[in-house]
Length: 266
Length: 325
Image (cartoon, rainbow over all chains, first blue to last red; front, side, top):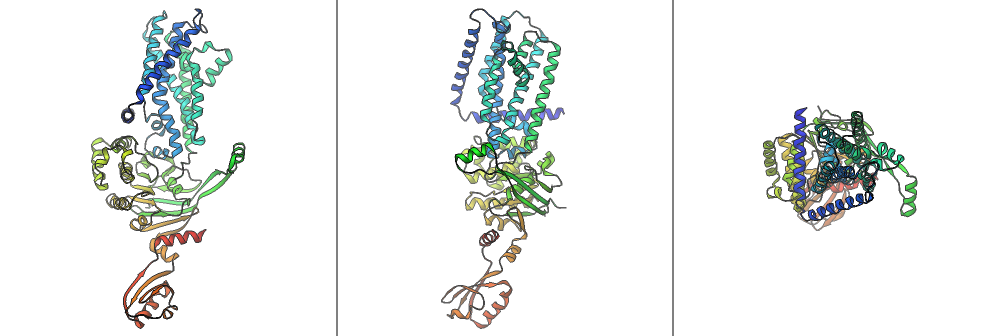
């Protein structure tokens, strides 16, 4: 088991090394992407600040607290840009060109390969913005630093990463039937933007939808509550179960979908 | 024990039938007309370890579908399949470690990086230790005549070089069963010959079983003692190339050079005169009458040179598939 774990970690490192060297072949992209990230970052802080011009709060969340939510959103975005986007667009291409054949013939878990084959550096600016925002928000709010807080935050953030991954992966899997699903992922991205603000800022019905149907609450609000030490043990356990369930569904769906893969003709 | 065994294998695809134009697109969007197409229809064969078998047939005959079922990429609609004792569709790692699929029109090498990087990824995926991997890369690249190409980005390689690198990438784990789908597609004559020589050598050294499809009869005649001929999903020949010619081409071409000029009418009863020019005669004679006709010719005429040939295999295959339509 441990041997297998190290094996997979080694393999992932190699995947990332290879894909980074592949990106270095095209050096010019870097600057534009970094610039876009910075502008995007400034823009979202500005919009958020508009809600607070009169000193009001957002669904019971203060300015500093909302910054933590926005910071977590940025962290997830960096994960999307570095891992989800480059790999899951590749699934669509694999299906379109029939090169999924090669993936399926490797003696390695096909989900692992299609999900983590490449990594993009362009998620780094978002990662940095996220870390700054979460730290700043935490510093500004009057909560005390505790080890349990950090542990709960890391745990719940990992959960939100897994949920986000499962959502994307579910959608990308449908390309086995529909081939081109790229527009659908754009819709998903827009929906996920709702995660920039705490879930309590939305009306009750939307809140229900964003919790159970499209689990946006789990993505940003719940990890933010962990930072703010406002989360109960029951909620942590519930989130954990929900995450495991969600991941299992996405995996089962992939295995199910592969039965229908007919591979592009030659 | 046979290495590949196929019994009553069938595959039915459901394809949508779409009429042309906007109207067709709309009606297709509202209600898809789905029709079943039998790509592979009840075929059975066995292949022994170490055999090289050619799989021939026109486009859309079901060759690629069969290969993909043998690899486990496509689930068969019905029938029994065994490759090295495994059921391919389960795609067990132990099975995948023993096979490889090379496709002439699809590539697995990373486009922007030198082939060596792709080899390293494959070696890691198959769990080949680094030292062993580099030993194998050296060995295979010398067999394939690859040197500097290994450190150049794949996008800068010629088609022939790329195919050779593809072969290396697919054979790094030393598979015992090779499925090759038109490995020589688009290659020039030299590159084709190099690939063929390589396959023969690989087969000899590693006792690998090879099943290959190709539209170049050169590949088939130089590599395969046995061919499977498939058309419209049905297998209609399984045997040697000679048997195929005997079965489907009952004639032989005979070219004779005489020391003097004889009238054409003397030869018409022997067979079809294809060409008669001064002292040179080309005749198409039925196989069954070949020996009697030849002894008649040798006894009654003064012959300088005699040549007996099978009709070209390309011609034979073309006739075969045309008649079958």
